[in-house]
Image (cartoon, rainbow, N blue to C red):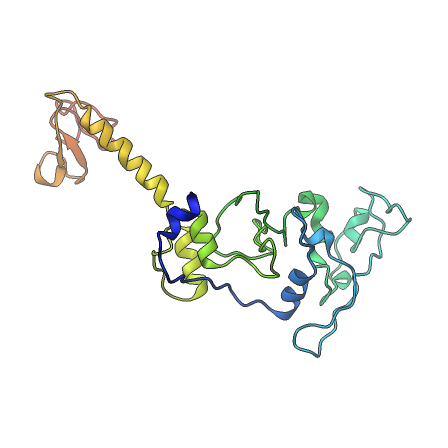
Length: 246
């Protein structure tokens, strides 16, 4: 029912596009399993050829003892920096161009092992948050399509916010993601509007109406007030007889 409502019988689907990613990011997304709940922790520590046809990734080297988690079940090290041994970080320890991002095991002990980064959405799950930039390494990193090796499209994010498929977005792909992520979901706005209308319809007879303060010289702040109370937030709603705006 929800999808039928958003589709609205339209014949053309727009914004079914997603942002281009760097070859290394593409390779990481391609190696995330399709199983629900998969994220970067399921990446193989392997050498793979990137989509440019020239670059090979490197294996991540675990060279330090992890004092918090100890060794793996096979007796292997878990740390990738001196800080795993409670020593100061050393820039020399940094490793680039690895399929498993070096920065994630480096700081994972302090951030719940970055659960969800490069994470796949579940068809039976939900969007934790619709963000302004679906970035796999962002704090809300569960943005990978459940069945395809890419991030979610502008239209999928728009549907998660309740935008009908007929709604148009403009600008670059990132601009459109921002328009979706910063928006108030239309179903929520509609529900709030209906509740406001209900309250107005149930207003007791004789209750004072709100007017624009700019039409009355007694409230120089230009805010809304009624005939009985000043609504300026600095005034605290005092009676106009005692309001310091008079």
